[in-house]
Image (cartoon, rainbow, N blue to C red; front, side, top):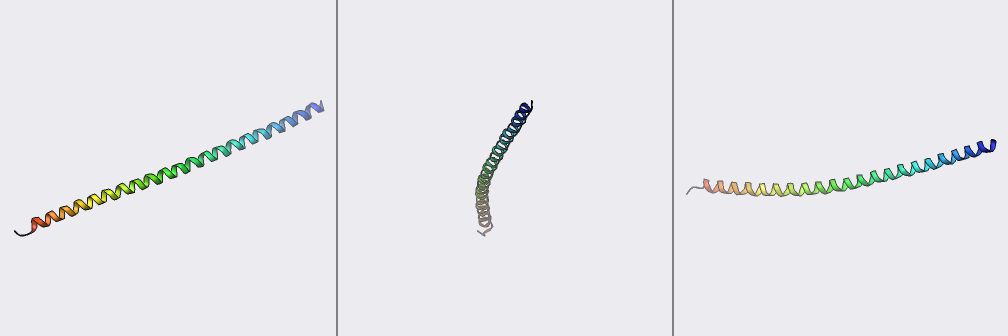
Amino acid sequence: MASFKKSFESLKGTSHSVAKGVTDTAVQAAQEAVQQVADSSKDTINTAAQEASRQTQAVIGKAADKATDTIKEFGQKMEPK
């Protein structure tokens, strides 16, 4: 009976070690997956911000050109004939 109990305790210890190893591996894999998603999101956000900035600069440039044209037209209308 003592031998059976000793074997059972050994099996229980081994099972616990295996379960802990599996859990540790799963946690590490989850952490790596989260980090990859975070890195990917960071790249995506950075790219989107750069594109938004480029488009904003283009719109500002067009608005400035339009304002310049409007001022020129106004100036020409105000010139005495």
